[in-house]
Amino acid sequence: MNIKTIKDIAIVNSDEIVIKDTQTAIDFIMSVKYKTNCSKIAINKKAIIEDFFILSTGIAGEILQKFINYQIKFAIIGDYSKYTSKPLKDFIYESNKGKDIFFIANEDEAIQMLSKE
Image 1 (tube, one colour):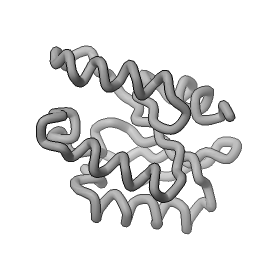
Image 2 (cartoon, rainbow, N blue to C red):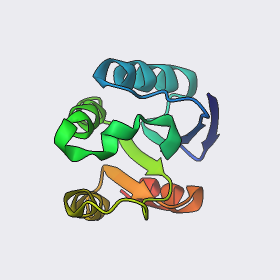
Image 3 (spheres, rainbow, N blue to C red):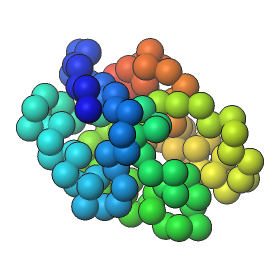
Image 4 (cartoon, rainbow, N blue to C red):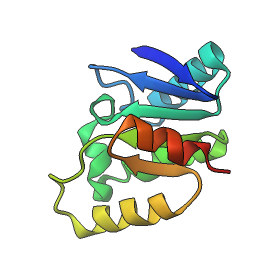
């Protein structure tokens, strides 16, 4: 797991799956917060278990609730074009209209969205 900070945002890049469930999400949040003191985190999509993107599993809701509980603004960077699920597309659309959770195509967009107050 590679972490860099830009402004007050931790950008995490990993080739391995780091977030698999709520416990690994909490471990991830605490680890990044300890190393960077950032309350805004972006991570590449392939570092999150694929079941996260199947909303019927409930994993996305459980994991994202942890980010909200710990007051972490969170962006997931990746390509979402392969997903055909209307509920997932709606979820991404609604999340991106909010202030805390974002599904973003690239690092620059993640920085822009996470920098908004």
